[in-house]
Image (cartoon, rainbow, N blue to C red; front, side):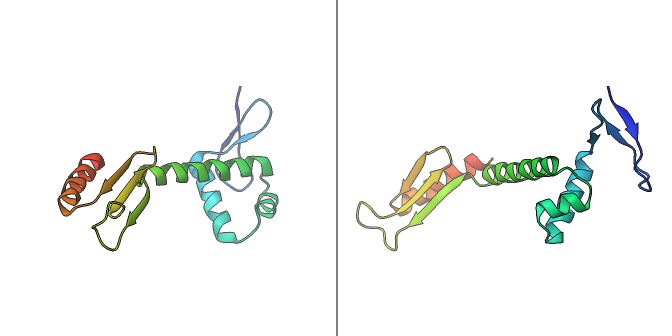
Length: 124
């Protein structure tokens, strides 16, 4: 069961659960985390100053960090790119490694064209 409370002077109604915990909407949570990043304060000090239970605040921060990491991995599926100065011997060339462990080694100029086509296809 949830009820609604209005924090003094805020003009915003926040829901509470049956244990009396305030349910902070996701957009408000993001605004609080943005403010924390600008503040330069420690997490403990910030949570105390703004009346947020530290465990809840730490959980918000961890979830935000995890979401950013996941978004970063999705936008860039590569782990490592190495290029040799010259292509000629068997160990030289370009190696591309994906997050899942798949690797692509390019040793000749013709393979560069094929690799570029592959990367374009994987991106779309």
